[in-house]
Amino acid sequence: MPPRLYGLVGQELNIYFDNIVDNRDSEYDFEVISYADGQHLENCYRIFPAEAGWYEITINIYRHGEKIGSAESTLIVSDPNAGNNISRSLLVIGDSTTANGICMSKLISNFDTDVMDITLLGTKGAAPNLHEGISGWTIDMYYSMEEFDGTANAFFNPDTQVFDFGYYMIKQGYSDLDYVIFNLGINDVFSVSDETDLRNTVDNMLSQYGQMIKSIKAFDDNIKIGLAITIPPAYSQDAFGLNHGTDYVRWRYKRHNYLWCKSLINEFKDQEENDIYLVPIHVNLDTKYNMGMEQVQVNARNPQMVEVIPANGSVHPNEYGYWQIADVYWYFLKSFEK
Image (cartoon, one colour):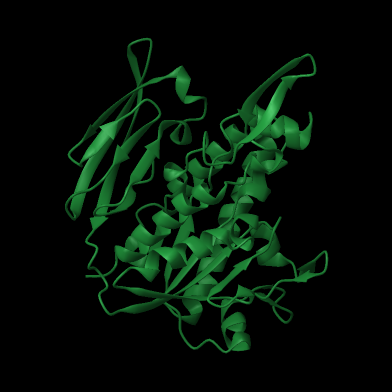
């Protein structure tokens, strides 16, 4: 868990245990210590905050009755009236989980009934559902590539040959901006073969994120920057087998994702005074039921039908999973307002 979590009075927030450990949650026992209004369920700690405030949460991890780890976080719960009659602008930079527009549409839906207004910016999508999401893209591609497979990088300055936020803002005619959220990492670590290669990849990712943040701050030091903690994969190996055959396995990608997220947290935690924030979208995603389900026959000789996560669900949520991600964006954005 990162040092801070975000919630909103009357809205559900989950901390799914499988999303904060490197192995399966079923290998451990969990103990939740919290003063927030919540339920310790089999697979998660579910919270319906009744009152705005800051609440401490500790999750202890046990194996065979022996405590082997602990994580602490502060839950920041906002009041529904926060940001009344205030409008903010947001730019989300991401991969396919942003490019398909589902998460952004859910975020718009959340704010449709909110006292606070949000305006999305970007060259992709269609207004009001705008963003900067490109399927298959990585941090490195946004930082160092002018184009890939016919898709141009709107942030690439041909003069400096790197990500240039000021260049982007001027070219798009944007004079100011309140928030930028990066939601990347899946494609960066998905194909990494071993942990030595992963370490080099992660070091490069962190360095490039640092340079991109500097570029944003050089344009406007008041912009608040959110780094979304990359979502974990589907709970079942079935999604990987259906989509990738034997090319990729869940356990390896999950471990690589876990190590990347842990490095991201360690690198950028406690930088709120610099307006740099970790956005914990990963804890709230139900990877068992919100990556999509489809009916398939058990095998060729058995006509019984069972539900499994579909081929495109190895790293892609369904509509409800995207809504869970959008909820955390919502809670995060509300946390700055009064």
